[in-house]
Image (cartoon, rainbow, N blue to C red; front, side, top):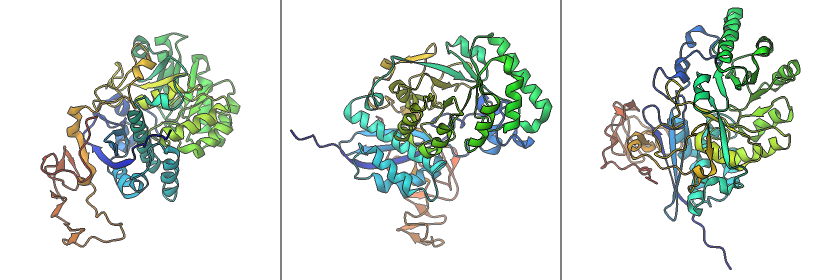
Length: 465
């Protein structure tokens, strides 16, 4: 009996998500949100002018984007992540060539092609984050074609429920919401000296006293410390029973992690959300200086690469606890044996209530209730998400943003002349006036009236599926 013919990829569309509070850029939120406007030590905190708000140094500069992949049978898979207009540019100017006409089941092959083709400018950072979102859209597409949730495609469930800890500003609120533990951001950086160190210790002591001696309390240092400071603060907080210290150093500093683990062999240290690909995680895992690794599935290379990293970590008995990423992480965690629990990143402005990780982008994003989710909460085809009709107005087709010619950048645009039949520099591109106005409140070389239905995007309109 011959296998049935499987749909192939027909089209890929990308959109920038306008405004704030929707999509895969966690930090693209309104002012006053605890994630951006509370004291949090960062790599830029060494400069006083960048301490008050994380947006001051550009943590939300890229914004969110959205990818759709359509198969020949009309099924559409989609995913969100961070990257904004530059991400859309990479989708169509580079990665699309590997996708159109391909079998979406070939996730390993497609990842390798995109990763290796971008090695000369990628390997980490934005290019790999863009590949991640494409990969997640492929897995969503496969689940929808097969009528199964993604976790059933990657091993089935190894557990019946996922227990969550909460990252937010108030551990007492996390405990009240039913989470098993709480993680708080460290407020002050090493450059703030002994006074800053003392304030950090007092900050953590206050939170320990507020939740009692037995409620697990973790600390997120966001790559902002150094080896001596980490050793000193961990020693100063020994009596506070900190469950783990997270991202004390840059993930590149594998020697540094060895030094802090040697200094404090019984204290747990974790990292990984800002590392990329199996190659980046290899050194972190092989050294056995980390007690947990924390990859972000929307950044490190998608579900395809996360499964490889998890298998590598399993060989060293190192648990994998993904960084945030909502349902994309949930399907992974419930399917793997070395994923004991999951993070919930508090998305409410004050961090004291449970809201969808991706804001209002989807109408049915599963969120933990009383600190957990069950397998039944994930039992819908693909990642089980439905685009919110109200969020459609925020999706800006990338054809209105990428006003450079579709030929290679080596072909110069002639001032005021035509490029690919389109007049440039102040005339029209795809029937849209450029150089001057706003797209959903965001100035983008001046696209005018992009939501006019008569101006259909070259790359298509968002699907409602």
